[in-house]
Length: 361
Ligand SMILES: [Zn+2]
Image (cartoon, rainbow, N blue to C red; front, side):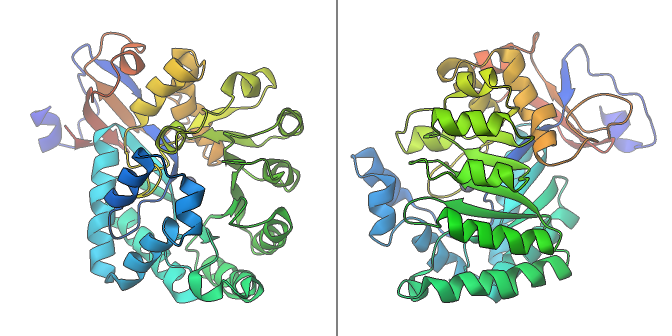
């Protein structure tokens, strides 16, 4: 190990009989924010619902207030901390969203923080503009003016400055309707952004059907997806990204993975790392939840954080160990690939190699 670190030109690396896998890919994170929400976590623990807290002005808006007040350096420092946490679990690529500023300049600022971290941290970032996360407090009486800002300013500027590869939105009661998402996605496509959507987290609003019809790369959450929506999704190329950490925190039922698999839908897993509904960087814990609570086999759980997660990011060069893949590897102190989801809650990752260089361990 030390010899390899001292001389990065050495192309042989002895993993000493440990488990070597493709670097893990987290296809759904919200890592750029300020402030913690311990108090809200405690309220949820005592029975208050996510939507109740959200509608009372808590939830996303409280992180928006803290994030707006933070300096760029504070956001970079906190983002870097989140990236370090992710890397230690064997994660080499993440999708990462803006979404905690909800003004034109603020959202672009968050995307620039992501760009800076992508340049200086070992983890690779696939950035998404999530201006349509929630309607900010100052636009509550006039949501149309905020939606126009997203369509006429945020999307064109983020695309022109190459700050985002994806446009994301939150389609839910209390957030954005399918009609609003359709207008936002039309603008995003026109500016060359690919699409992802937070859909059917608490209620089935038809978001995943709309997103699939519009050619979205992924639809994420799906805890409350109906049988009809699953059928429609099964006829598309769209990947389902499931987020068991959010279901666990919000005390929701787990997404119906078995039905999604049965409909032939490719299924990925993400941490949904965010300060409100899923404060974890552990993708292996999501694999454990998928196996223990959602009917995944260990093989399906591994595919969901490697090959299928890569598919959900339109990245054929990562998530596998073939010749066409870049050398992103995670090394685990484990005798068997099933050991990782089986020994849940523990970190077995002992080294991470990013583009052929040891970056952790
Ligand atoms: Zn999310």
